[in-house]
Every structure is written in C-alpha cells, then in structure tokens.
Length: 471
Ligand code: BYC
Image (cartoon, rainbow, N blue to C red; front, top):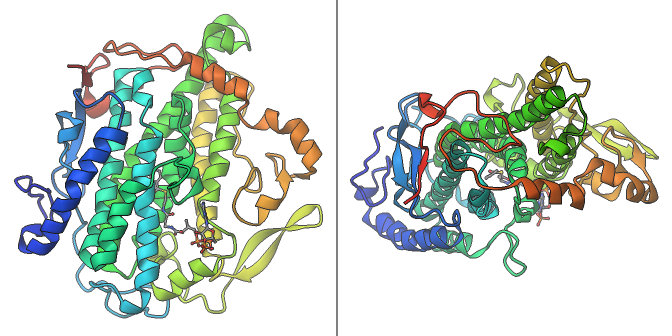
C-alpha cells in the first residue's frame, strides 16, 4: 500500500487506472489550491515548515519529516488497507459483505454524512487562519500548520469519496465545500461550532483538545461503516487525528504549568500581573469549548442516527467490540432528561440514543486529559481542580438547549443565569486579556511568557530547532 508521489494527486487508490475520476479530481484541485491560498493560514505561503507527510498507510510506516512550503504540500488520497471479507457489522444488513459501492437506497443519507464530515475540515482551517501571526513559539507554529495541512487532507479524503461514488451530485457537493465558509452570513459551514472563530491560542488548544476529539469519535463511528471506502478512509484519518489532540492536551497543560509556576515563583494568585493566564480563566475557556463540542453529537434522541445505524452506515464507537446483537431493536439505553427543576435518567430505545451513547464515550475520554492537567496543578502544590462542566451546561442543541444550568448541573432561572454566567464562561474582559498576550515569538527555542516550553521536540528535535523558516 505505498503512496505514489509521482502522481499529480498522490494516492494509494490506483487513480491512474481511472482516467475519468482522475480528471474530475484534477479539475477540483486548482479550486482547492486557490481556497488554500485565500483562506488557508495567513501570511504563511513562503515559509518552509517542518511537516510530516504520509509515505505509506501501514501502521508506524507513514511519518516522513522535512521542511516544505505548505502550498507545495502533497495533499493526496490515502485509504487504510482493505480487510479481506469484511462484513457489515451492525443494523439490518448485518452479516452481508461490506459494500464497495454505494447502496442505492441509502445514497442520500450516506452523502449527507460524508458532506457533513467533509465540511468541518476546511472550516477548521478557516477558523484558525490568523493564529500563525501570534504564535507563542516556532514549535507551536509548526504544530498549527501540521494540523491545518492534515485538515486540508481530510477534506481531500471526503471529496474523493464524493467524486468516486456519487457522480454529478458528488462533484457538486465537492464544489460547495469550497463555497461555504466559516462564519459566512450567506453560506455558513454546516455545524454550528465550525462558525465560531478561533481567536487566540488558548482557544486553539481547547479546540484541538475538545473539538478535534469530537472528530475522533465521529470518524471512529464512520470507520465502522458498512460502506467500505468510507470505513477505510476514516481509519487512516484517525491516525492523523491523534496528533491534533496531543497538541491540545499538551498545549492546555503548558498554559496551566506556566500559571502554576508564576503562582509559586511570586507567591501570588494574581497570575495576570506577571503575564500568565490564571487558572479560573482557563476553566472558563474549558467550559465554553467543552459545551460547544458536546453539542456536536446532535440530539439525545435522534431518528436520523437510528436510521444511519439500521442502514449500516454509521456505527457506535468500537462497534465490533460491543457484546450485544448489533441490531438494537429491543435494547434500552439510559438518557438524561429534564423533569421539573431537575434531571433524571430514563430508559430510551438504544437505537434512537446512539448519538447520546457516543457523547457518553466522548465525555469519558475528555476527562482523561483533565485528570492530567490536575496532576500538573497538584504537583505544583496548588489547591485548584479543573472540572468538566455537566453535559447540560450551556447547550445549544438537544433537549437541554431550552434550559439554563450551572456547570455542576443544577437547573437555574434565566435571571440567575444572567447574573452568574460571567463566572462560568469567558467574559469579554477575559478574551481581551488573553488577546493582549498574543504576540508572535519566532526566535528558535524561545517561548512566550504565558506558556511553558514543550517537554520535548517534534521527531526528537532539540528545543532550539528552526521548525519554521521565514523566507
Ligand atoms: N449544528 O437528529 P439530529 C471533525 C441538526 S468534527 C447544527 O441529532 P443527527 C473535526 C441536524 O443536522 C466531526 N445543526 O442530527 C473537528 C438535524 O437536522 P435536520 C464532524 C445540528 O444527524 C475539528 C437536526 O439538527 N463529523 O471532524 O443525528 C477539526 C436534528 O438533529 C447540529 C460529523 O459530525 C449541530 N451541532 O446528528 C476538524 C459526522 N446537530 O435533519 C474536523 C457526520 C444536529 O432536522 N455527522 N443538528 O435537518 C453526523 O453524524 C450527524 O450529522 C451529527 C448530527 C452527529 C452531526
């Protein structure tokens, strides 16, 4: 499964053997490059960036590092190897051979899932396009760009599926991916969280920790798909996603570390006085990014999700490892709902609750990083604990979007919310303060004052490595 870099579009799908598809993708390519030059990372086009590029899709064999100009990055089409005799593993077609072509009766649903997934990828690049101008170090700048080029490649992954399997409407959808833009009043991105700007680096680290993790869970569910090309492309995308979440987890951890260092060094709680970001502000950012990411799982009770499952298009997280019938006709699942002025857990059909189950898996996973951040605080001997807010806090989608709640899950009145929400979510003043710290540090080995240096370099490089060269 080696990748052919001689091709105009690098790929491991024998693109050269399908001239029609190759021509269609080559027609889409200039539009993509134009989009990258207009809405990709601002001011970056002449820089040489120490990026990793996929050289093979085999585990462990794919990372190749070197300085590249991002517009010359070899975006391509890479699918994980085909599993012999793979089956549809859940839903009404359980036990059938996995589909290599789109099942005609599910075409619209499958296309919608692929379009929704694909739309988020360029959206995130657009959201982050100004961040390079205020990087806290060359290490961080390089990581931002690595994330950006990989999100660009993930768009390629979905565009390939649309072109290869959905004919003319697939090609139209691929065009539309470059026409919708994050935050555009007329043509916004599909999912709400992808229309919010990522205005500063603390937001970026929170985004890569919490929102990229939604990506991990959605991709993992799509990797279970009975539509084999979707499964294979998502499996490879997941290997890239891990680095994005690492950037988020270590990024937030370093901001926390710096706050603790300042508190200890100056024997003070007034971290801002010394140019750091205080733990309470970090907690408010966490509350915001967690809650908007939790929304990305959709409604608690969703017939769309039930249909995707029954059709065999989108499974649960690690579907094949779950010990049940994978049909969910009579199974139940406990889902939180509002009752009076509190919440209760009630039995629901497990089939219509698959979004909620995925959200549960996601929330458990989010907690692991929070525990690590708390270890940093504990080791510094500081009495403070970061917490994930309750799932009902600050929701815009689903049954909790109609109520107001505290971060610990108590339902409150609108008036109480108006009075208290500034304690729980970043205030204008917080955002202004964090923005005021955002100044580019581009000397090799130097790091901005508000964040601790990374524990180790990328690919074993020393602290003062020139990850990005400005030309
Ligand atoms: N915003 O039945 P429901 C990533 C709509 S992130 C706006 O629950 P469903 C990445 C919904 O469309 C992962 N609208 O919907 C991360 C529906 O509309 P209709 C992206 C929303 O379909 C970082 C209605 O509400 N991938 O990869 O079960 C950087 C009823 O809702 C939202 C995917 O999401 C929302 N948040 O669930 C880069 C996977 N939520 O039918 C990349 C593909 C719901 O009434 N998508 N609505 O017109 C899906 O699986 C599903 O579309 C969702 C929504 C889970 C998102």
